[in-house]
Image 1: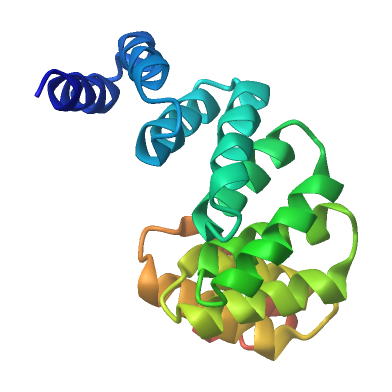
Image 2 (image 1 turned 30 degrees about the vertical axis):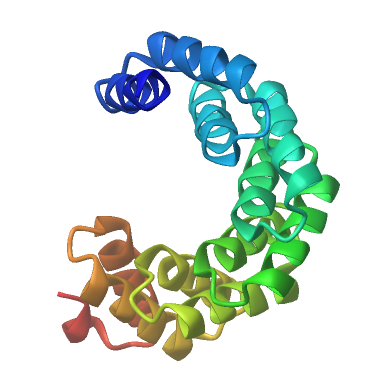
Length: 193
C-alpha cells in the first residue's frame, strides 16, 4: 500500500508540475523495486520533460534491457536522443519502434522531422505520408507534408495537405497562410481569401 501511495503521489506531483517531487518519489520507488517498468518509464518521461535527456535515455535503456520489445520505450528514447542531437541513435530507435508497432503515427512524424532537418526530403515526405496514413487526423503531419510539397513545387498537393491540416486543427493559422500563398501562386487568389 505504501508503494502504491508513493506512486500515486508521484503521478499527482507530475500532473501539477512538481517535477522534482515526482522524480524524488519515483527514484525512491526504483530503489525499492529496481525492475519496475512503469516507475522507470514514468521517471524517464519526467526527465525528458525537464530537459534531462541523458537521464531519460538511461531510464529507457534500463527498461529495454528487461523488455527489448517495448515499442514505447524505443520511441521515448528516440525522442531523448533527438533532443541530445544524437539523430543517428534516434533513427535506430524509431525504426525498431516502428517494426514493433507500425501503427505509431508519432514515430513516423518524428522520423519525418529528423529527415527534413537533414535535408532528406524524400524520406521526410514518406514518413509524413505514413504518419497520416496511420492517423488521418494528424494535423501537424499534414502541415509538414504540405510544406515539403510546396518546396518541391507540388502546389496542388500542398494545398490539399494544408486543407487537411486545417480540417483537423482549425486554429493552425500557419496552414491558412501557407495555403493562401500556394493558391496565389496557382493563380487561384479568390480561393485564398
